[in-house]
Picture 1 (tube, rainbow over the protein chains, first blue to last red):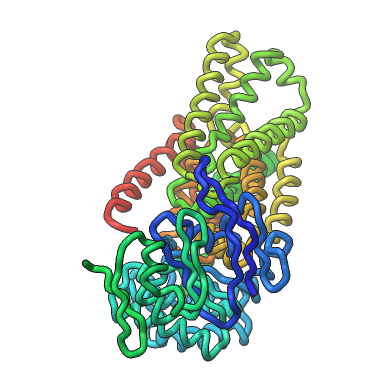
Picture 2: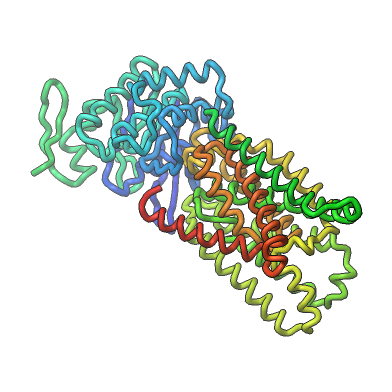
Length: 252
Length: 318
């Protein structure tokens, strides 16, 4: 379990996160939603030790992340940020192989090669595994990065806006993969997401942030509700039940 | 997979060939006793500087995640000249000649390491590390050091200035042989230390976030590598003078030529290229121009042309 306790983070006097506490349920997809500047990405970065909090603790499976070895954490938790501007010329396979670094320190064993093969297969990238990243479309690239995270084989997978710049087809494809990761491999997935309908349909739990504070969290069904969403986004939206899924209509 | 290896072997053969030519050209039975040892010292100095410069530039580009930087951007070599000028300015050139060059060297290295640690504290050790800010500060500090140096150089006695001038231009004809041994020792120690970090370089080049995600103690690696860079830059500068521009040239040539991201290959390749261009350049200076120009002029000319090419190419795409 990932526990976040009293996290506070300031940037130049502005509190981006203000005394945030939460716990992430194992084996579920948890979505962070909220308006721009609510602190979602910052919270994700703090949980994954990319950013240091001013105060507060992050505890992963009972261990404080400041006290754990970075390499051990890399076998437990992985993060994929939205801006992946790697300026190396890598093939998909080479990128995915990097995911094994925490285990092999760069010298791939047979087991590592096998895990890389599986990750590539899992993301259906076998045909193009020797293509270079700069030859790929946005959706393929995103799948390649997720394959790297799959190869890293961590219990917790954190993704910062994995659907950014993707069309509906590719968005659905990515979300389905995340669902499979949770259901087939028993991973725990935490994502930052803007499209509340994707959050509603694909996630188990939703954490809503606003102005650096958690305003609501709980099962998706509980959060996707007119009153709660109004308090988060300050706009009135209609919620329809379609095929037993709650869909928000917020275009008017 | 095999191709980079073949290319490395080709580079190694060219390097050995050039070194052999350099060692044996115009050697006859009656002058070899005099010529060979002197040339050997030059070659050792070239191997040391060439290696240091290629390695530091590659590592610096990796930790800054930028392909057009060299450690000279931190103002390290102007700092070295500044220290040398300050010593002459304050204590006179006699101290320079009297002082044990090893001590002078060690003090300079210590100051340069201190300087880069301060830079690190100020600019690398932040989450919103801004490379442009670092560049700007580096350039400002660099020109500050060189302005203060030239101010002091104007004030001092012209004879004393000659002593400093010796150190201002890269030259393999007045190699600081006194510090050759200590440089060898330092480079050997640093190399042993660096091998522990070498496996991190490939992952570091994915950028800070990915490196941390993959379990690298990023801050520590960057700090230690920056210190290694400043030690090795001091060695190279103290031995022959400021030629960090060479680093930009060979590192990018290595990238273009070897077309790989693997640092083990890239670093070996750029060290070999660096040795080739230094020995080759020296041969041209000594045999074609018969010492009417210096090697830094040739390297800066070739490097400058290549740099412009790089910028123009950059405008299109990576």
